[in-house]
Image 1 (tube, rainbow, N blue to C red):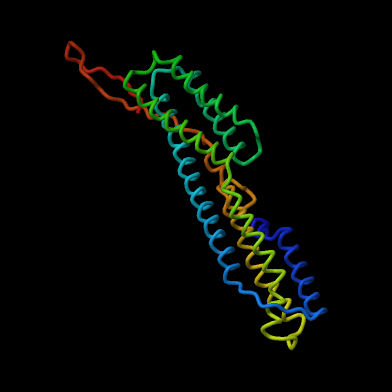
Image 2 (cartoon, rainbow, N blue to C red; image 1 turned 60 degrees about the vertical axis):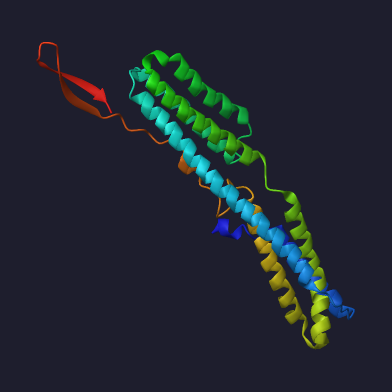
Length: 269
């Protein structure tokens, strides 16, 4: 429930207070004015729609690259787990992978500010592969480098998304237009209906429309950061942490030796 109530913030309180003050002044001093809100509506609707569309696209792309990152890293671990590496080295690469993922998740959720730690951890994976290339066949090494490339591409995109927000200009224009609407709408309504309407009617009409607009603004403002854990639409970054990987399945097969007899041997699948 707290996440859903987060769409109401100090802007909501300011809009309510400004609506009350504007209605009171207009009625108290008999102020009325003709205002064409068509242009003001265009200023609000189009930038707001643009900002929400950009924010939604960023969220979908972030989900795509988070999934690609986890899938690529898991593939690296699966391949290395099926090689002739000893158990200690297999546990070491799993530890490096978990460390990289945890640092990335903490950074995206704004619980950490050191992006360099993520890049150093991802480089440790490459260093590990290079230092143990003797235990990996050349064909398998190419696959590992392909998965590593996809993983690094995903990391760089996610870091860039975290560092750079959507353009602030349209959002600032929308916010200014909403406050302008709240100030001038009571006088425009009095111009149309006269002073026959009561104070609470004019206040309700003004505050209701203004709160509706500022709530949409707050929603798009929260969507600017796709990793915002306080937003109901924020990506659940913790879902992309690495879980414990299953042990490889040992398949018992038979092959014929040079004398024609069958020997048992095991392969990792």
